[in-house]
Image (cartoon, rainbow, N blue to C red; front, side, top):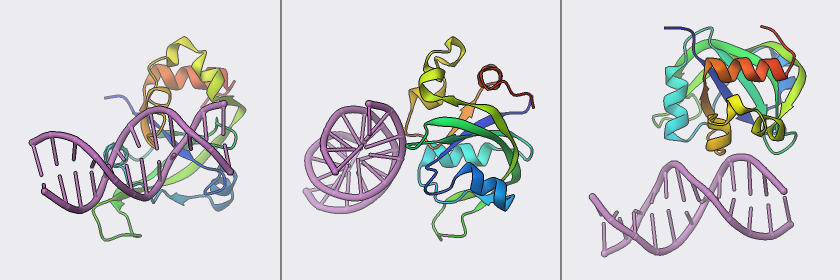
Length: 138
DNA sequence: GCCAACGTTGGC
DNA sequence: GCCAACGTTGGC
């Protein structure tokens, strides 16, 4: 099967793209939603992950990838998972929520349909459409 | 800062 | 196993 891709959301005030770039890696902790957790667990090393800023910006700003596959969330003893992410490259131009709403290929995108899901799958077509809008090639 | 939407929790 | 209450998220 082809490589999967994903989208993660973060409030810039909590964890921003620039912080990920600065630190070079991020432990994606704090996910407390079953569906999001299942998505984390489905990630494979090297999968592409779009990085979206919620609340402040409301746009996709960068491309990351999975550095380490799901493991026990170190911040809790409960059954939650984290992955490690690393930055790949920033988008040449960010793609806003409004813009994505206007792109036909993204009509069924999980980000738009289930706006509160913090870790969501992205199809190949959706990834291509976002990257095209961002004028960015991987 | 407000509020609607939605997921989770807990009482029954 | 249902459902009301609660907490959180995220767009506006």
